Length: 179
Image 1 (cartoon, rainbow, N blue to C red):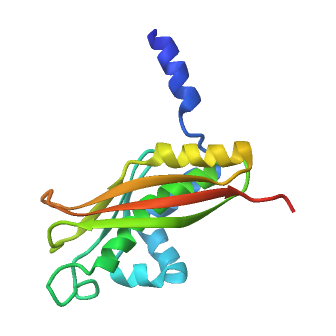
Image 2 (image 1 turned 90 degrees about the horizontal axis):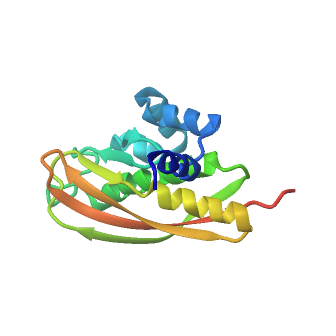
Image 3 (image 1 turned 180 degrees about the horizontal axis):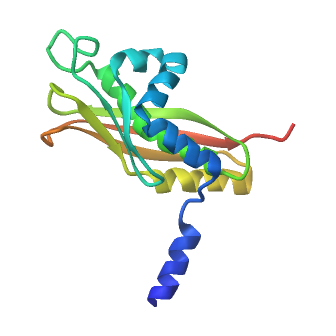
């Protein structure tokens, strides 16, 4: 395959970006806009210090601090606070895929699995690189009208590289009927 053919193929299979998706990316990565959104729609995330550190069509990193609002009695970050950041890292990508779709698509978590390694005693960064799978599932549901699912994994690490948790979320997508 030639370089030109590879570039053409990559452009054809690359996730479609819309103005809405670009706006969502700017809002979620702008600390003030995201905190404002969380205060009104996700107050627990606001008070916990949840944030989106990085977001593009392929990957998202969300983090949650270790602090008195997120600490458990064992002096580590409470698993629910970690799950919140893990969900945000996959959910932001799912929202981006939905906003990039040419039709209205509903999204919902239908499954969750978690494994915990070391104690999270510092800010935990959850990175999901499953954007391609989520965009493909949204494309399938838009094309067929049938529900489509994608299971993506996010890995939580502290700044020193210590892995604290792995979460797998199954997202379901369904094209909304025109009413």
